[in-house]
Image (spheres, rainbow, N blue to C red):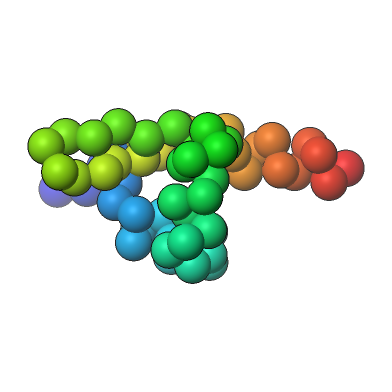
Length: 62
């Protein structure tokens, strides 16, 4: 059985992926550089939003 990558990531998972602190991830969400949704009291970030953020940052650095 293969496990697919999750479509929705938690803030701690995004922190680990991007090697950033909690405050920085929430700043990216507040500034709308990362898209997020709220389900109940849980904040989730779509995996494709993280990929778009990384791609955008790479383009900006080039």
